[in-house]
Length: 320
Image (cartoon, rainbow, N blue to C red; front, top):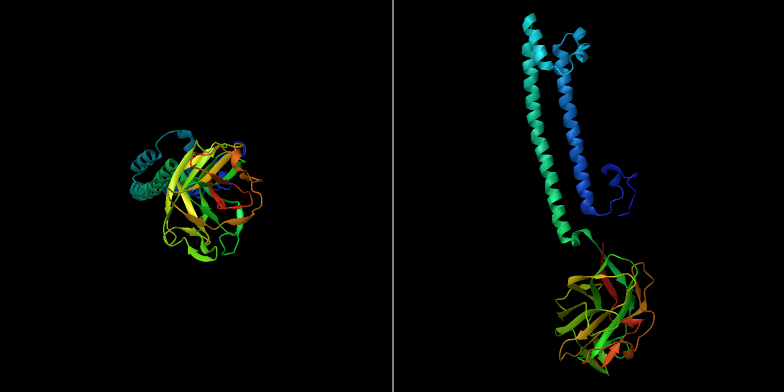
């Protein structure tokens, strides 16, 4: 939401035009509707009292109301009617009954509007506690085009227990949480002139996030068992990987996100190529890193970290 100074945004009528979050906007609009209904009800009750008063009061007496201050007008009219033995008392009682019926009807309307508003506010509070409801998911594309070759040697990354694929990145704004990523699908094609299809069986991949280049110390890690026919995909070429926990990122710090094969696993994924245009959220690596620039886990014998290709085609982040 674009911030405005308090001197500009003084009420909800103005604020609603700057709120971009649908849930908060629903609360504001519901309250404004409730406010409008309440004002309309009060206006109608006021008009009913005016009509009853004018109807039962001699016109020449209306100008004297200001002299009575807080005197109860209805009681005053009753005493005048009794003294003059007129029909005004009956008319007043009828109008008073009408006002009471009207008030009862409006009380029901008030309660319904208030209940609706309370329901929305309760849902809003629940969503705030969950936070995800009030945050914006962003897909930050790193690589935008997959090599269409079906030959693994030209279009894939081969994983086993000793290989790790790494992407180095740096948040360019505060308030970002890493929620997940897009990973290119398992390879299906030709490997050394032989057909091979890694989509036929599930494979385990562990993802981890590290601050700096020390891959032995992780901020977060999670393992997924991915089976192509059952796993969620986008555009037919990427699996959607969503972490159970979202990790807050610090502006200006370098991070490494890694993908490891599960123990005793052997498989290949396709890889994306061609760098996406710049974005205002994340600065991706602009060079390839070699093995010696990382502090690698003991079991790793090869680190793949190329800036213009790889398996990290996009990140899913949350912006507060």
